[in-house]
Image (cartoon, rainbow, N blue to C red; front, side, top):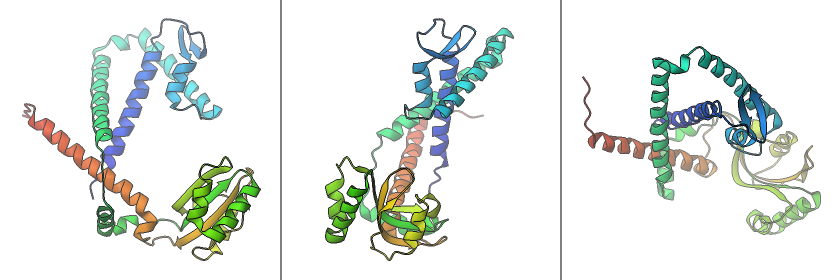
Length: 276
């Protein structure tokens, strides 16, 4: 199977170097922003820049606090480096130039990856699974299930009744746009340690395949109904249907990586390259 670590490493490079440049640019703002969350001497971190750093508005205040403290620490060190003339040194300028090349190269490859639409057939996925079955061996006890979580008990009870009367697919189709549905997962393979609430593990262990659970409340005032499809022990290899989504993800990643390798090879042929 094609090694996918290069793809993950490229994402880390982009994120790391981009964050470095965001910090670096933040260190050089001459104007005072109207709304800022931190300041070191005449350098400010604005609220909008903080949002760019955290990538999402749905993050905890604790995480934002860590980002702000990291910015302050880096800003203090940066200003001291400027005082000592480090930013004017040849080594610094070479490092910046190399970082620009790495970032530009990584963004180019990421752009190519995103433009590569991998269309695969069910037969291709099954063949990939058959050829790589051992790589899908489960490290933990896992449950293959359908799960619906509601914001109120009455909706959960009505859904459970509908599932018993008409089957999961029919009942699920009716509630997908309901305001009472918090989450709906179908044919989901879940490791034992990711099962929530934890009491659900005991309930699942008592169910037979295709059996429906009772309505299960949790400490966040949500109500869950589960249909067990199957369960698998640690170190077992689940059937294709249970890992179909993971098979598709891995196969598409492998195809993308192969396309990247071919793309780089084509670039080599278009350029004069000499290694002595």
